[in-house]
Structures are given as structure tokens and as C-alpha cells.
Length: 299
Image (cartoon, rainbow, N blue to C red; front, top):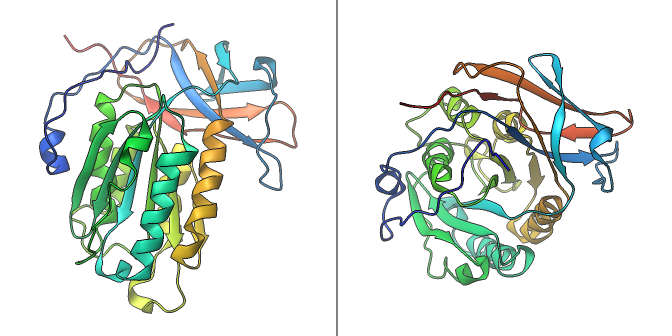
């Protein structure tokens, strides 16, 4: 099977900053088959399974494409977990977050999946490089001591580089934060530009505690600008104690996604191409990335 992105297992350096780990040269592949991950829900948000290839339509820049590859079976995923470790997460919030992450990697993912875990305050830090099986990362955040500001945008942008060296075609990022961005060097716009070049779903869990200071409370709308572009979503919870059920819902979606592929009718030109996936049955809704850059082979 020809894939848009070729998974490569690479020896990442010993634990250190994400910026150092991401300095290895990335690769670009010619777009022969465009692979698109799709989640389907009804109007209540319930995930829909059991659909076939003929139930889907995919449009590139408004032109319908012929679907040549399709599976409704769960395929392995390369997933990054980004946890807010700023000062506002001190005490019970970080304890609840660690428990949710431990259960997520230890119980809710599959042994064939690969995961990295990173934390962020005023800068992102890698807690563990790509690891298989995910259960090896249980307790990887033990001893985490929150401090400093919140640099969500920098964390998302820096860790996006790690997906260039992932093992699997299907990819996702989970961001957990309880605060607005207060420390990033990048703007929201710059972060969106980085995300546009990635094919990973981005999920965000925003902890919007009513006890937080108004000036630093998490801003779900800015997170939705990022997650919606990728096909993921932002869920708002009211305390870190709600992270367990929220991460379970994300794991359930990862188990019930479809993958479709098509050969573009246009040669690669390096330009952004809008994508839209539609389910022929009108009462169902498809979530997928909104576009991709059709990169040519680097010579």
C-alpha cells in the first residue's frame, strides 16, 4: 500500500528538550495516495461504526475524488500526550492529571500503538520519546512538580516536529491544559500554520475551573481553532477529576475511526489543498483534517 506519509522508526536521542530531538532531518514524500482519518458521529455526538467505502465522499479543492483505499478496522496510532505543568496545576490537579494519563497509556490504548509524553510550562519538555507498547509509560510523570507559565502554542508546535519520525500513518495529539497561553513565543496564527502541515488529529481537554483567575482561565475557543482544523475536538471539563472520562471518550474515538485513501487527480505542487469528507447519509457528520500540502519529492 502506498502511503502519504512513510513511518520511520528512528533512534531519538536520550531524553532532553524537544527542540534538540527535533533537529534531525525530516522527510517529505510525494503524494501518491492521500490518506485521511475520519471520525463519524450523529447529531447527538454518538460515534457511528459499520459504514462502508461507498458511504463516503471525499472532495479535494471542491472536486470529488475516487476512494481507492478504505478500512473500518482499528489500525495502530502514533500519539503524543501534552500535559500542562504550569503553576496552576499544583496539588490535586496534577495528581488527577497523572492518574488520567497513566490510565490512558496503560489501559486504553493498544500494545501496537506508540506514544510520546511531553509536559509544558513556559517551555515544552519531553518526558518520554516514542515508546511501544504505551503501557511502558505508566508512571512516567511521577514526581512532576508544576511551576511557571503556560506555553500551549509552543508545546503544540514543537512536538509537531516529532511526528515526522513516527512509526504509523494514523496520528493524534492530546493536549491537557487548565490555563490560557501566557508564555509562548509563537502566536495562535503561527501555531495554526504548523498544525496545517501535520496530518495528526489534535484533541484538547480544557480544564475550566470556576476558581481560576479570570485573566488566566483556559480559552476553549482558541483551542478549537487548532483542533477543528485537524479533525479533532476540544472538550471542556470543570475540574481535573473529570479527565478520566474525557480521555476515555478520546480513546473510544481512536478505536472507531475510518481510514480512506485516494489518488489525487492533480500532480503535487506544494500548495495547500482543502479537503472535505462527507457521509452520503445526511444525518451523519464526518470529521477529518481540512486540507493538506501536496509536497513533491525533494531531490
